[in-house]
Image (tube, rainbow, N blue to C red):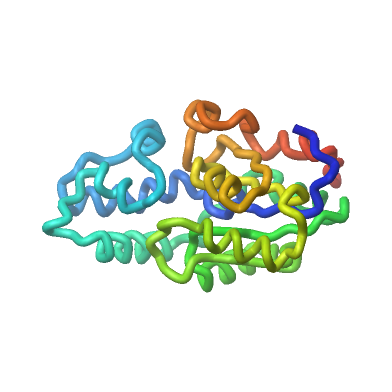
Length: 220
């Protein structure tokens, strides 16, 4: 997995850098309780969650005749935004992104999170100066970020072989393949390790393994 030719890292945000899995479950369980639907635990969430998010909502049992996907998405986002700043970064995120910067690699974020909200939360954690680009979607419905990824690669002006995308879901792998870059997945977010490993052989149990993969030394 070691690839000394990488010059740029594209990070996913939710679930990869931001540890928001349990928070996302709590927000969705509020919507489910309001409608008398079965609530989620981690095991069920890892079974049903996927992209596009519209299909995930259908698997949860929401009745489209009573609740449109648009209304449900807005309700979920309102609930998520209420306390999103209470979430923490995954352990060692600050040290890892700092080590990557020291090694001379540039970094960016490619997220299905709404763009303006992404800017605000990355700034909240004081990470903005570490990234050359912050790219989020122009809506709250998280259909796909492949087109955004192609735009970001074009902005970087680097050969795709010199770019590594790091994410926590199979959608990140999908995006990486569509835009022609390498991918490492981390099984600490919204898709479990066993699901990731059925489709990809470059899966880490946690971000703590990434410095070894990239040949980096973490700052003290």
